[in-house]
Structures are given as structure tokens and as C-alpha cells.
Length: 202
Length: 146
Image (cartoon, rainbow over all chains, first blue to last red):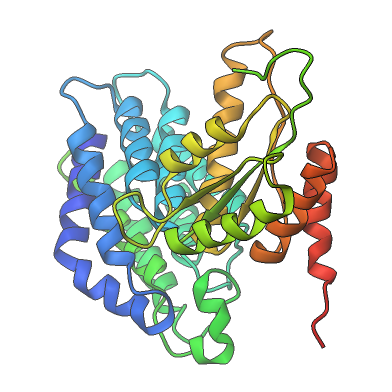
């Protein structure tokens, strides 16, 4: 699995969908999610020097996201990628099991930092089921597991629509946050779409 | 990077906000409580003139505020809190890489932004240590207005 391809594809997908993410955030947050994440990922891809090993790619991208994103998605996605990169270590190849451990480390990082659990209407509602689905399918190889993770992320994100937000800016809206797709869950779907595409490429 | 030996330094305070104007305004208010005795540094906005939080600004502000007695961070919403937590995590990692060096205490207070900042500055001006300053900021949650 080419982690550079994963991050670059994530950046492309967010750039293409930045307006939609910002619109989703404007409905229940402060309307900057697409703009911020797009800026952070642009900085992340620019920071990726040629020849970095897979773990270092994620750590470098994560550092840039933390530093350049500007919104809550910076520390959350940045922290997640850094922890995932650390979990991969210095190895030159990423197999299905190593990627599973890295994804689990990413989920832990997001939950430790943001203190969100499933059902709070956050990115965790897409991330947690995606990681679980990946781990369940890891024996079938990276491509199949990543596809299972994407399917679970999409389902989890859709599941945020009827929820009332208990974390983040949307929680200030109380019951008025019901009926909207969570923007962080929506961008997490893009993270897993990028992963599935990078994994399918080999 | 510590203060002069023999000179009592007070705990520094860093105010992290999504808004640069809000951080600067709160710093102005809080500085009134400890004129000339307490260093209060704002770290607001994304560093490029927009709303948001910048970990680089936080890092710089902590460096400016630390006179050797440590620093208390007070954050407002969402990304400010997450950025402060991330900064502290990174600091811990960096310090783990240079054991044996003297380090000051740097903590994030669980506190309301404006009232907590004023209470923290007031406590710091009175010579309180990092733990007591953070506690004073936290106790500002109890200020009732009706």
C-alpha cells in the first residue's frame, strides 16, 4: 500500500469536495471545514519530499495538517495520521495487518484528543466502524479490507444525520443539529475512499 | 530560557482563541490584573488574519510568556482546545527526547475564557504557582451573574 498515494488522493478528493464540506459545516458549525482541510492537505502534500518511507509519509503529512489547517480538523486528522505513521514504523512495505494497526492507532488518537464516542455526531461515527470493518476483513488483503472500511464509513456518516451533536461546535445547536450530515464524518468518508483507491492500485 | 536567578518570576498566561481580536482583548483585560507583574500573551486566529488556531502561534506565545515559573494555557472553543492539547502532547514528546534538562510546568486550564483569564492573571500576580493559577482559572466557572 502506497501511503503517499493515499494522502495525495485524499487531498484531491477534499479539494474537489471542499465546497460541499464547507456547506455541511455552515449548516451546523462555523462553515470552514472544507476550506480548512483543503488548506491543510495542500500543505501536507507539499511537505512530502520524495523517497520518504510509508510511515514517515503519514507522520510528515500529519505534522503539516496540525500546523496549517487552522480548525479542529487539523489536530484531529493530523494527530491521527501521525499516530498511524508511528505505528507503521520504518518499514518499507505496508501489509494488511500493519495498515490495520495503523488505522486503529489513528482512531485512538482522534478519540483521545477529541474525547468523542460513537453517537456524538462526529468523525468518530464514520471512523470507528470503518476501522472495525477493516480489521474484520484484513485477512482478505488490503484492497478488500479498505473497500469494506469505505462501505462502513459511508454507512456511519449517513447515520449521523438523525443524531443530535454532543461534541464540537454543532453541540451548541442542541436539537437543531438533528437532520444534518456531520461534516467531519463526511470528510472521513473521503479519507477512506482515498484509501480504497490507493489500496486497489496496489 | 529561564528568568534571572534570584528574581522571583510569576507564572505566564497564554490565551488561545479562534479569534485574534478575542485573544488580544482578553489579554488586555487580564493584564490589568497584574500590571507589570504578569506576562499574558494572546495566541488567536490562524496566523494569517483569519479565524482559526495556529499551533505555531501557541508555541511562540508560550516561549514569550515563560519567565521560568511556568505557563498556564486558557483556550476558548473547539479547535483552540484541541490545538492546546496537541501542543502539550508535542511538548511532552520533545522533552522526552532531551531528558535531564530543567523544564517548567506548562498546563492547560479547564476554565471559562474571559473570567478564567482574569482570575488566572490575578492569581499569578499574587505569586501563585502553575497549579494554583490553573485552579483559580477553573474556579471562575463559579462566578454567577444573576
